[in-house]
Length: 334
Ligand code: PBG
Image (cartoon, rainbow, N blue to C red; front, side, top):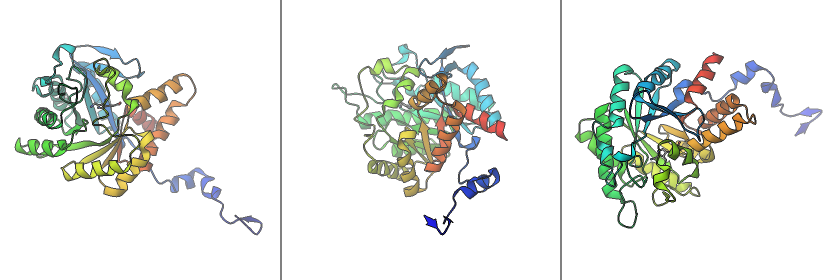
């Protein structure tokens, strides 16, 4: 809007120099905002690349230890563990999900004894353990049964807490699971175990590479998760879900996927003010990586921009496969 001979407000004045850009900067990204998801395998000295996620590997516990050490050194507060379960251990009843000597409990014990200060988050859902790749137990029609599944999830969460999980993260989207987990944890004496609820988890096509990584894609086949994960068309419903999970006892809530759902993150943060996390999922990682590998995007700049955008949208932290890269970039700058 011209005012006499000059614009009434020159927004570019504050943008002119680095010092004034830094002084008016509203949000910052630090290593404290990052959670690193990792894929763990049984056996020793095993390392497998995930084809659709360049730079991401499935690792056996012994090879995961140096990765955890790197995270501690970089100041990343927590890891999120995802197991790759051998086909022979998958079943209709998903019994392996609460085996106290299973892969997740053994991973927790190994990490906790060496890196007690590193937060450990476990995924509570049955998809790595079922022969059909669904997150719960199915009836004869293939429908995922809610209450029967919740009972198994509660046993899984207690097994994780007993083995050293600091945070259990139900990603299954069954109704009433947060309350059931909280009750089971309290009854078992795990009063400090935090619950990070995948509260607004959408039935997204951006999870494809993850399902390759944990080996559930083949089991799931043409199946989908529409009867329990949320419709990408809905925003109000996310607030409803988050509100219920908080009432049921969640300490932290998550919106997933990340970048296509920044509006949901903002609404959740504004409505509840609770610790809110975004999951930059496998498909988002794959997109950025593929473009960077083709020389079409500057990986470092785009990763830092995308992660900062989650902060601006209201997230307190981000689960991201770029966590170590980002922490390293941020370290270089200091
Ligand atoms: C399964 C689970 C999924 C992810 C985390 N936990 C996949 C799914 O719901 O099918 C996806 C993570 C990602 O895509 O990075 N309970």
